[in-house]
Image (cartoon, rainbow, N blue to C red; front, side):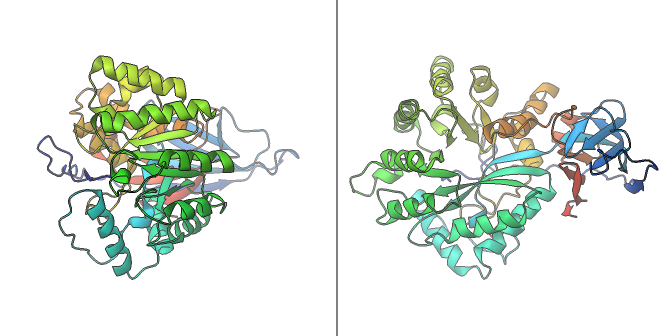
Length: 440
């Protein structure tokens, strides 16, 4: 997490407005079981659900057939079939939150009044203050937020949880507990994130090592090795520490880089060199990367080529027009970019809602998107970019893809990005997991 937060979305850095609610046309979703009389002996155990009269991406109405969690072209002979009437709703893939901090959230808690903060150190102090003030354990708060995200159409997320002497391992333990309770509804990758620094905070490196060996995390994090973590006056090699832990325990890396200019670019080049040297291509991500967002055309292309060669992905969180990554151009150069919520109603900001369709709206708003293809690109970075970043198959609503989609009221995909309609149904692996914005 960094000092520019979810509220800074406009060119004047004012909070971005929520889109005006669109009148919802109530159309009942009908559930019906159909039992065929002569089930095929091999298909008797096959789970088949037919979502009738839906419009994938706004196309003409048709059926989406889910067979054992994947979309299929036809119903297997003799299968027992459940039919769900989509009532002509728009069908869209569910989304991936590539960067979220569920351990920090005050979602559903009493209102927390934030005090002024300048720089990461003061925001971090606010984190500790809020964590001590909240009455609800971190696991319950994380579960509440992650459940809400799933009900809004998030099928997977990469969750960062703070590892620091102030908390021990309670953050990763709480988020891991929430992830277990949501198994089969939302996939969760978990990052042990040294928000307080590795070098500047005595004991943080040892806790990271404990987290890496715990079996709870999929990734080791890092934060601003040339900036925030170098400001404490202590000697150390943050990148050497986190890369060493990742290599030793077979984990990925996801490193926050908020620093701009050369202070952000030099560590990025170092990360690329270490990634290649250790053969970790495809297992390293850099979050925020504000220094990349500020690059000119030639410098941007050269940096993108460096990242693509090293197999390093990026995540962006639609903070503002000056910090959102140019994900379309980066993708053209072979760099995978995912979109994330970042913090949600934490000590850094009162904003955020863990709704990735709204996050696509924020990206479009920050980029002043007007054309249909621009609006669609903001959706795709949350759907396809996030899926690629987490190593998931693309949910493109074609036969053979996962039966992961949502049904909403709307005409087409660009309109859905603008309207952010209610998620009437959310389907995961062919099973309805949420209705009307709530888990089923």
